Length: 217
Ligand SMILES: Cc1cc2nc3c(=O)[nH]c(=O)nc-3n(C[C@H](O)[C@H](O)[C@H](O)COP(=O)(O)O)c2cc1C
Image 1 (cartoon, helix red, strand yellow):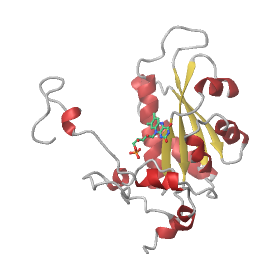
Image 2 (cartoon, rainbow, N blue to C red):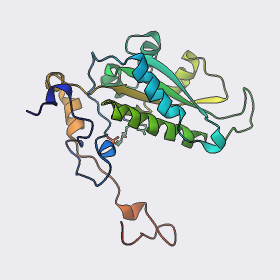
Image 3 (cartoon, rainbow, N blue to C red):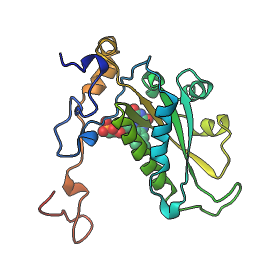
Image 4 (cartoon, rainbow, N blue to C red):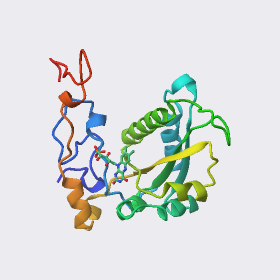
């Protein structure tokens, strides 16, 4: 048994079912776990660091078109979010230490048709990526999800109509060996499923769209 087994995987461990890709350890060590430690708590300063990472990410014209509604396990925000989760996500997401609802600003102001930025959702996604790797660098795991009732979320969290509910982000510590040992088989099976990716030829091109780039792909 490795020394970190009881604490869960080390931050630069690859997914058990992942081939070793030649990328930075912090990227190789990320996967969307469904096995969170249901007791672990995120401290204020940890959450602050994670949100700071999102805050300092780039955005079109520095528009910063993102918002985050943050709940920690058992607080009212978390409880409300849990009630909106899809059947698939309710089996794992509530165990995470924090559930964050993400939003992007779609129009400049309430009741306006004027788009704030064509890149608002792109910018939110990038902020989510930065947040992810900040958390990962702190030994935490992140699992993003779209499976929840978006319309209800907008109502429950009183979202103004120029903001769009986008995704959820679960953050927490990976379950330790004892917790994994009692996890439902359905979750364990998904956790062990090999992760699949397209070949470079499917998305890296040169000369024209669809023409696979030679040499590095
Ligand atoms: C926008 C978005 C929505 C997602 N929705 C869900 C979801 O509802 N439930 C879930 O279990 N995983 C969800 N995921 C996680 C993806 O399934 C996962 O990232 C993908 O299968 C690749 O696996 P990996 O993150 O472990 O590399 C979502 C991820 C993103 C970025």
